[in-house]
Every structure is written in structure tokens, then in C-alpha cells.
Image (cartoon, rainbow, N blue to C red):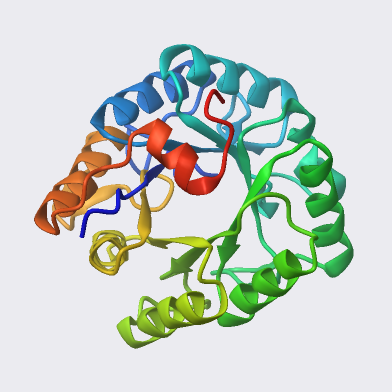
Length: 277
């Protein structure tokens, strides 16, 4: 298999803290430095959240602006992907950074259970976020926590609601949502091939499922996500020393399956993004 594999690094998220792993980057400066190291290890996409000074989740557009600017300066060509997830804001605040025109932004097209709460994505909010992404020419990365999210994304893209090329990420292993189940994963892949053959897809595993799902995705010809947002450990006994270490581990799997790690330029071409960012 010679198709390049896009490696996405989810650098921070909204949940992990330095108490979980001192390597979790919290400040914008820390995030830029961590992203640069992950970029040099092979990551072509930076999936970005921002935090307040006390480490709590934020959706502050100014923080997103400084983070995006720093990544573009230090990681030439890297795809900047901002999160519109619900842990860092509510309602329109979740899309307040979209006028900054990142290359991509995450978009959830349905609701589901999370470990301690319901992750609410009502239809009117989905429609508004999708409209803002279209207005500012931001390609969505669909975060699918359930089969219905995949089918809904395919439907919305076919109806012209979603901007750009369809890109769906399977998120597996969140407690109370879809587990990391190989039969389910294989079914997801088949659905994508049969119903969205021109789309690209990615997969992410949470916690110890990270390396497992990385390998499934790489072996099946998809793309994959890693990083400290999803998993703070290399194994039960060892914390991950950095985002770069998790990216390097995924890159080793690409070598195992004889797939080249996608350069930023190759990733942009595969995802239909502007070649110059």
C-alpha cells in the first residue's frame, strides 16, 4: 500500500491536565512548542483546543489566533484544525474562532453520551456551525462517535451543507459511547467505501485504545490521530514524554505497513485544502 497516511496530533484537548501528565501543553507557548516537535516527528494536522491560564477549557478566539499564528510560523504547511467541541463552550461560542479561517475545524453532527454527561449537538447548532464553516471556507473534520454520525455526515455532505471534501474521523473508546471494537471498525470502513468512496477517513482511539485503533486505521488504508488529548501514556507503566513520542509511535506503524507518512503538502492534496495554507 503506497497511499500516504495523514497523522493528526491532538495536542491538548479539554480534559488532560499536568497532574495527569506534565507533558500536556497548556499555555499557547507550550502548545506551539509541542506542536512543532510533533510536526517534526511526522504530524501533518494539529488538532487544537485552548485553555485558560488556570488550565480550564476555553473557546477564546484570541487564544486560538495566537496558537494558529504560532503553528503557521514554526510548522510551515501544517494543517491547522480548531476544535468546536462542547467541553470548552456552549452555543455560538463554540464557533467563535471560525472567522480566523483555520484550514479545518472539528464538527460533531449528532449527540451521544460521554463519561459523565451528554455531549449535546442539537440540529440547529450543527446547521449554524456548518454554515459558519462554509462562510469562512473551513473544511470540517467530522468527529463520529456513533454510526448515525457517519451516516448523517454523508447525508449532509451530499446535500451541500458541509464545505469542502468529506473527511470523517471515527472516535472509538470514549466511555458510554462507541467502544474500540474491530467488527464495528471494519463495518465503518465498509460504509465509507460503499457510500462515500471519494471521501477520506481517519480513526482515533481513546486511552489504551489509541495504539490499537492507530494500527487498525493504518492497516486498512485510512488516516489516524494520536496525541496527549486522547491518551497520556505509552503503556500502563510509562507516561508519554511528549506529543512527538506518540506521533513517532504512529509513524513506526506506518513503516510496518509500508505506508509513507503524509507530508503537509500531500495531506493538503488528499483533503482538498489550499496548498499554501
